Image (cartoon, rainbow, N blue to C red; front, side):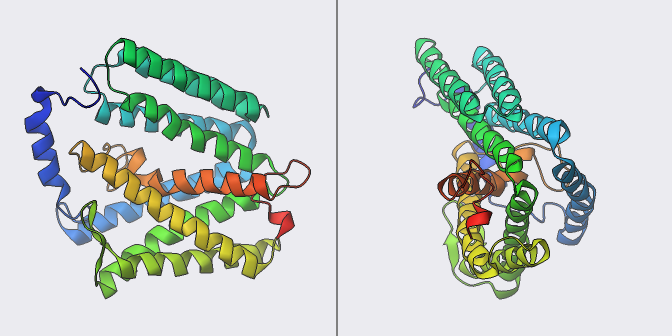
Amino acid sequence: MTQDEPDPRDADARASGARRAESDPTTPSGGRSNLMVRFLSAIVLGPALVAVVWFGGWAFAGVIIVACLLCYREWVTISANGESAVILWGGYAVLLAAGVLAASGQVDVALGVLGLGAAAGAILAMILRSSLWPVLGVAYAGLPLLALLLLRQGREGLWALAIVLAVTWATDIAAYFAGRTLGGPKLWPAVSPKKTWSGAIGGLVGAMAAGMLVAGVSGVGSPIAVALLCAVLSVLSQCGDLAESAFKRRFGVKDSGDLIPGHGGILDRVDGLVAVAVGAAVIGLIGATAGDASLGLSAL
């Protein structure tokens, strides 16, 4: 079966999933109760993530590698229709190898492994006449994996990741409350019916404020320059969110999984972070000095 030929066995399941996708993801069984579950999950997971970011090293690398493997598994579960067991396990091996290499400081080698692995997976998928979507999952999970590990290794790595997380979280939270409060025209109703332009602007303002706060506390970079940087990253975060929504809609599912109570799967929680991490790493490499890829903060 080729990439463009949907499996007729999945037609009913996808139709059912598409109907579920029209509902508000924040209110599947009552808005207040689900919002409380989301809040409690964030209270537990947020500090844990901040702790591993603070300590860095292999503790941080291990958490990020496991999270990216889980992202890849959810991606394949959604897109592969059970056809690509070889590609699935091959993707695990590529991501694990790339993660270990990047955590050891060999990011360039890790990027080569990731590229070769994705190319080999694409060739295998064409030979097996299987979907290419699982192979795209290697890049989707692998690029932020390398980006996050690269950012943490820089001279200002701790604060670079603090900005990345602050932008991602502030964009998500501010967009949600601004959109719910102000309403207005929809941002892209064909992909995500609940998102509004007011929410997008609110997320942008929230991200800039959060970035300036981090810059003020850390003393790295100019607050104005960091605010402009955070505006760019906030746009990337919202684009990442929309891209993941489009991916799920393509396969007729509402949530990528049910691993995190009230939030869905890992992909549902890191859609913005995926784009922000990769964008931040690229910006860091462009503005880097002496091999430091920590968002180029020392140059701001």
